[in-house]
Image (cartoon, rainbow, N blue to C red):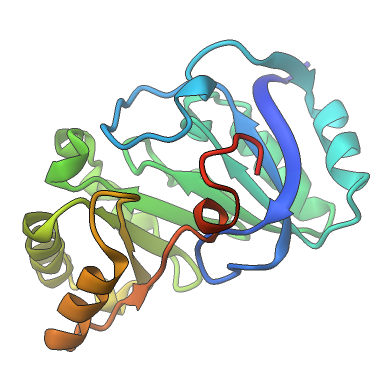
Length: 213
């Protein structure tokens, strides 16, 4: 029987991506092979509770929501995550996967919206990026860059040009919380006429660093 180690399942407003502000069920898997310096979910590196797939689906159903986000940690570090994503899609949810981009996404159900976080130099984990993942992205997917400083911004611009990312899917730029002023990042985007979507972590402004929100 497929089992997954889960840190938490909770109901909140989506804080990022194109469904920002919409009520969403979050399934946070335990474990991550990366250690980004700005990580706000280090509590999900260890611990958690083992669930079988049906128990996860049963808990998700109780919220009667349309949107489900599978996150971590790094959810793809647990192989049964692929089956969970498929089951959630089969249940009729609009499913998104938040992944670091360090692990292969090619086997993810094509119905899932993959939100791939390309790691900038400021993250401390830039060498973990799996550039082959770009080939597996579909138009409904999203690429996210968390910008820690202006050097990260310039680096992200160069990556967009190098891989022609604007022709792949939507691109998101997010200021690293309390490291880059949101207004500064917005100004850089406007100055350069950059074809990206600016976003902030809505949940941080509503509830701060409270886990499970």
